[in-house]
Image 1: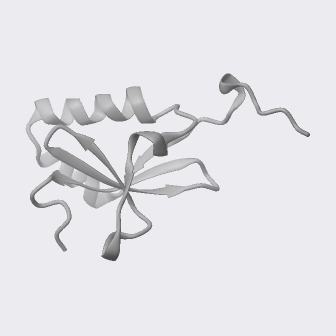
Image 2: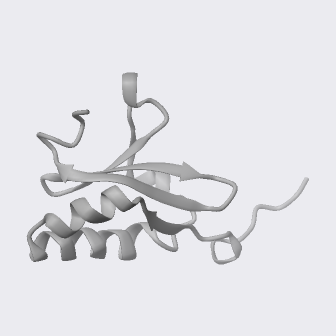
Length: 99
């Protein structure tokens, strides 16, 4: 039986933004932008298990995940083969699930 890799040897995930998500982020207050970027840098980027910090979405958003940063939500998809958390939408919790 193979031994599990030590935490430091497991591959790390990176963050990428969809163009739309990048524009949505830029429209937010600079303080909120910094909170979101700090969350992504400190918690998600470099993590070996980024799903532990998020929550899977259901119904018409099944297959996507969300991260909560205060009153804001990041809607993401995981690209397992490239180890990328791809942010596809950023917005206030009242509006982010609409479309």
